[in-house]
Length: 359
Ligand code: NAI
Ligand code: MG
Image 1 (tube, helix red, strand yellow):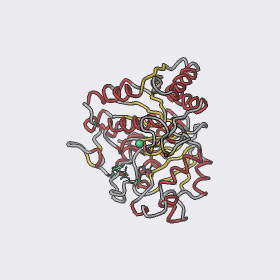
Image 2 (image 1 turned 135 degrees about the vertical axis):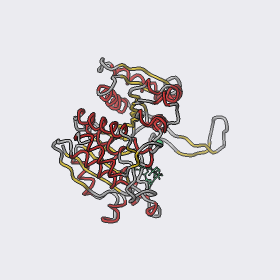
Image 3 (image 1 turned 180 degrees about the vertical axis):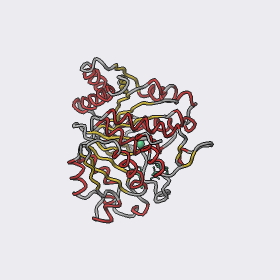
Image 4 (image 1 turned 90 degrees about the vertical axis):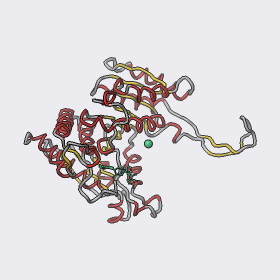
């Protein structure tokens, strides 16, 4: 199992070091190789995604990514900015399925914007299609309207598009992911208004027949938004297009209240994936040893489950994280009264101790 380790900038190096420590105590045959990415790579090689880094990522079964970016690169031309590295990796690895879990540990329900009883134990997975939809559909542009409500006025237009194969491949990903969870998929669409999402609904329904062990239901996106804040625990896997997924996944993330806890993944057709925390490089706290490494450690768990076929090891890491929270360890972003304040390294050590039974 080859893993490319790309720590990046800011807190990226600090949090990835803890995830690597956790992977190392699992006693599995990993080959881990580290490379520079983002601002760190720009400093050393003049480019945020050097060929050597890209080739390492391509050759790996999975990529564990920290974060990139810093205010000091804001004046660079766009193609050299650290954030271009993540776009380049997505494109070159063909990553089309974005996994955004919203997990709320019982111990952290106080941080949610919802009542504790609505989110305690929340564990849902939003799968967002990343390459199609209105974000990339052609034609698009501006023109002077020749018809419509205001002929002669300036207007702008975008095109919502999905092809059958694009929908098929994301649907397969969703059903396979559901098999590793509670075996329920909710496909979110707007088929009542949009032809694109009528095709989406038809294709997801067809693909679903190949997964008779997984329950499928369909929900309009407006209702899905309402249900997410009303009774989020009733979902298991939600699968949707690029734009609806963008919006719903951010809303779902906030239900859990803490950016330092949320992992994410982007997968391609070969289950090769890039795993990273949902947060950025946090330049405001970088170098202080206080960043929460749990989102990255939980991203490593997702990597084991979805790319490396090691679901049991993933479960072990997730239980260890829960045990550490139960024991009261808290980094600054999740701190509350009556808990023990720890730094990045101590939090990583606590997870390692929980895994090795050394507590
Ligand atoms: P951010 O997520 O880095 O930070 C937002 C706030 O949350 C900050 O106050 C930060 O201290 C805090 N925070 C984030 N992660 C934390 C953790 N693990 N533990 C404790 N506190 C944490 O977002 P921001 O400030 O908007 O962006 C900073 C830089 O990161 C920018 O250059 C941005 O472009 C980049 N970025 C990179 C991403 C990536 O690498 N995929 C994603 C998002 C932003
Ligand atoms: Mg967003």
